[in-house]
Length: 128
Image (tube, rainbow, N blue to C red; front, side):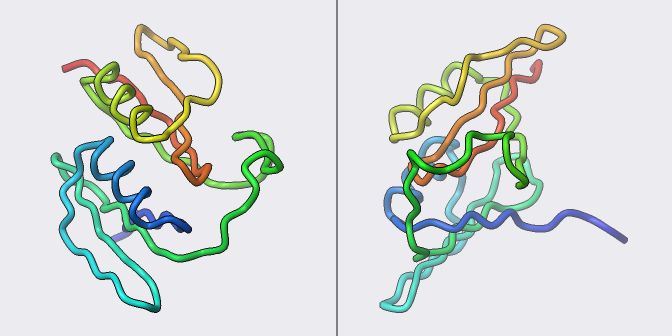
C-alpha cells in the first residue's frame, strides 16, 4: 500500500491558524493539544481524506520578502469544494488572502489562497 498521509502546516500564531483552517474550511477539530512547549491540532475534512495538522510555534517570516507562490521550489495541495464562493468568503474573513485572480478551467473555478502565515493552497470548485 502507498498513500498520502496527513498534511502538516507549520505556523507561528496557533490561534489565528486554527481559526483560519478549522473555521474557514469548516473542519472538525479531532485532536488538539496546547502547552508551553508548543501546540498541535489535527483537523479532519468532513468527507474524509488526509487530515490537516497544525504545528506551532515556528519562527514567522516576512511575508513581503517571501517568494510568490509557484516561483520557488515547494509543495502545494488542492482543497476541493462544491461551495466555492462561501468557502472563499469564510477564508478571506479569517485573514486569508487571495493570491492573483480567480481562474476558470473546464468550467471550474480555481483560486490560490494564502493563510495568515503565507502558506498557500489551491481552492478548487467541483460540481455537486
